[in-house]
Image (cartoon, rainbow, N blue to C red; front, side, top):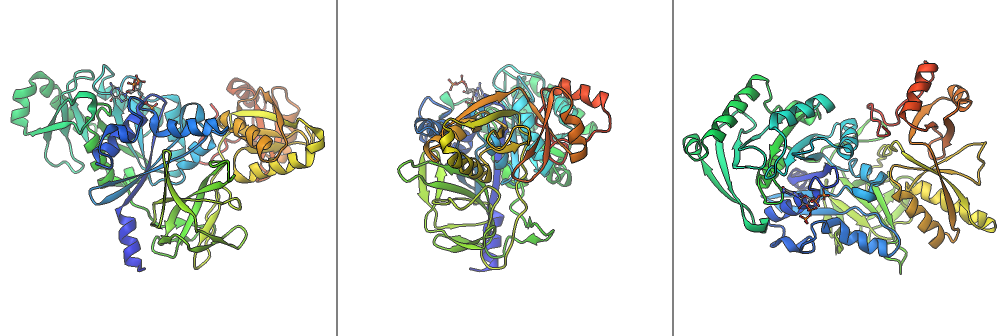
Length: 536
Ligand code: G4P
């Protein structure tokens, strides 16, 4: 293995996720991307035919049947000499802390918007995490084949609401609902080519594209063409040109218009991803240094999954490779314990398929089987030691008190809760008032509670009862202010066991505002650096 080989392989990779609100078309787009890149030959190969939610839901159903239900799949798409790793961000009812953690493992994100709806709640939450990490975001405005909003209005919403400067790389010709094609604006002010789309029945194959110059386009599209040109001129005036520096800093976002279902503009999106999204770079370590991509192997666990195979009660660790070349069978060092970790069983998981991974490079995701010793955030390495900073915990919005159903199994109860806390399945909080036997579980999605309940009963043989608490927000506070806050009504102060952080839980944002107004100066900080506050 040479450093040159690793650098070349890393350079070919684009590791990204799609952030969107349920129903914006993430499954459809995933399929279209894979299809367009010819990773699969027919639309039915990834999703069950007629079930466009198949990419995640086949897997989900299987998990649910077994009593556990979260998953994250990594899809590898080979395209134009590049390797695109698409990491799935679970949505819908399976939204959990893992959804956020996936974003700690990507180098770029596609923000997928429904053209009729614009920015929606879950997109905003996920975008906040991207912003905190300064992840470059490419925006894809989907469903342009249906009636929707004005393109300029959508751009304005992006800029006004999230402060991300939109820089269109293509511009739609024809209003939403009467989509004719796109003008390619390019990213460097180069030529304006018109790409006319011809609908393909069912979107089952790559949509037919017809390229033409401005003159031919004007003849074909008439008024729609003129209007597009007027809008493009306006874009020029307001300075909406692509700018690499601000894109890579997460401050501006290339925007594309298209429609995933009939496969309009998906090729442009792939091209944009390949051309503009960054390949894996050096990763900051705990000590303020960096692990270059060509250094010996290192990677970080960003997700743990338990019980995928109940018969073996295995635990799988999803690792994003940061540096070096991974080879199956390597013996790595587990930074947290200093112990060796054998990687005999390594898989790539997508949908319900598992294939064995033999080699992997920076940007790839590997799934390590029998990984009970590992936890979310752990570093594995070869050669010189490296420890990556922990993955931040996110602002929980759901809180419940856990109690052992059978007091005689208290020891097992304590062990189970501690284990699930260490794995990052749920955040565990406690206070003197509530006592050790009644910890408060905190989650970003209620599904995390289901997983805890299931594993406590099945794995630790200590079934629990959960009583939901009427809080929706958590803020960080100090010991001194914590005491004052604890005395107020509508909130409660607890300590997070994993890092000792003092959190104040509040019923809702209205109550929070009242407290802030009546007691100015009390420390109540949002939980994730960078102003991210997913609790509102
Ligand atoms: P999700 O994973 O983000 O939740 O969304 P999904 O892909 O399941 O898409 C949600 C709905 O939007 C689906 O319709 C899908 O067909 C539709 N859709 C996605 N992209 C486009 C697009 O570009 N144009 C149009 N017109 N529709 C799109 P559904 O009615 O819920 O399901 P189905 O019965 O059509 O499969």
